[in-house]
Length: 157
Image (cartoon, rainbow, N blue to C red; front, side, top):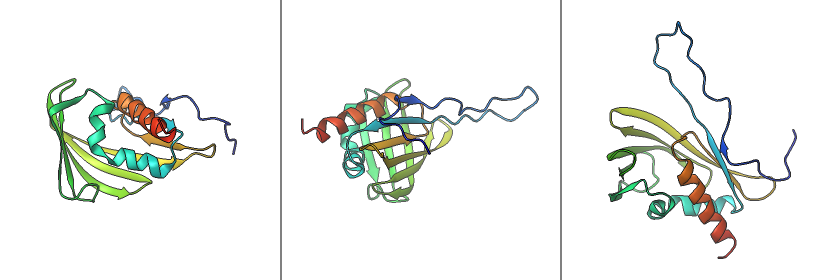
């Protein structure tokens, strides 16, 4: 296996969206992956990620209704209700399905009649820091700001 001396560029992983053939009548299901890197170690990365009160500082997508837990935070079966202001005002209802700190969390999101599964994985990077990957493409700005906060705290700023 070849290892890079530094993390690759941030952004979507190319070639992950399967095309739909002209004879296929099933709805197209698209899986989008997004990966970022931070110099913070996995433990610190999870600590910042799991502090959901910080999330609004990573993006202006959150509405005034904020984020509310029903059940113990990060426990399978608990629900996370998120008021979204942008691009469409709505509430996301997330049910935690798996949570194994500091390595991964998964949930099922219900929003505007759609149901989606999302995983967020935190892997130690061989060059130091953490590789954070997720399936959601719409969260790119959130993950960039999240990594910036991890880097800021890791640097002691």
